[in-house]
Length: 362
Image (cartoon, rainbow, N blue to C red; front, side):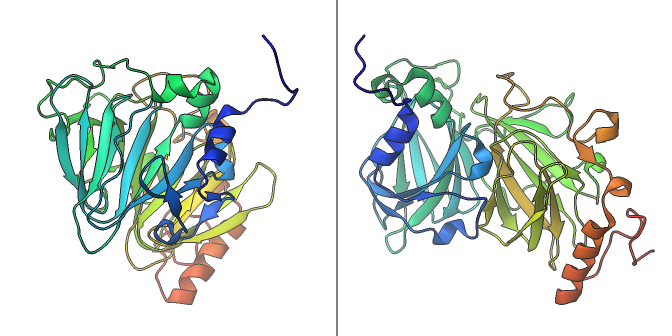
């Protein structure tokens, strides 16, 4: 084998640069609906990459926009992709090389995954406004693992164990709740992440609710969390690549490496934050309605994968080998910051029965 230079090859980075669309970096995106896009030849629409520092190179995200009344080009690839609709109404068609095409409609707040290496095409159903979506993929790992773009994008293998053309209700089925696993659901299309019912998760604190999804048999995963007005969740940490997208509410997050300085990001619907690998982070509702977010990430609860993330439970105290800081163990300044944020908007604090030094005891 002949080498023309001695640089270290990063096939994913080279492919990404060749797309000639904006690449957004950092810790945080204030509003995904306002990110600047550019024409993207591969997709046939407009796009931008979102490569935040917290991914650690394990996964990525991109935003794509479909012009009014138009559609994107048919696609397929040997990496997983989850799609969250930010704006617009439309439809997606999915098919194998041989077999029936499956189509389903979507709207803001819809979530679904593309079955691995299946053909798919997105359509904007509105003639007067664009449709925009966020996608999270494991393209960095897959492209660099094989470092052969023809294999990734031109592979004809059909993963019929993940998506069979004969499954009539693949995208229309209600999904399966796993009764032996709390708050777990296998499903391929979630119509309304903003309004769907969630389930209580007492261990995470503040009366929060939660549900986790197994989408299209992926090794990637997603979950929705919600917590009430005047409350905040317990701090915890985990591996890289959790794309936390705000669905509703107003608040902020604190992020910090163990023993390091805290970083604050304020968010509203449409914001995105990706906590870096093993950084503690904590989400605070400082608004007037429940705060809800969608996390698109590594670490499926159903399919074991490489040890990219810690196996330490996120709902057990660090004192007991878990990844969570209990309320009584957090620094008092954390709660003082929260009460100050509430005071600015005239919102009540409802943490009195949970935090020892809360000034709003009930």
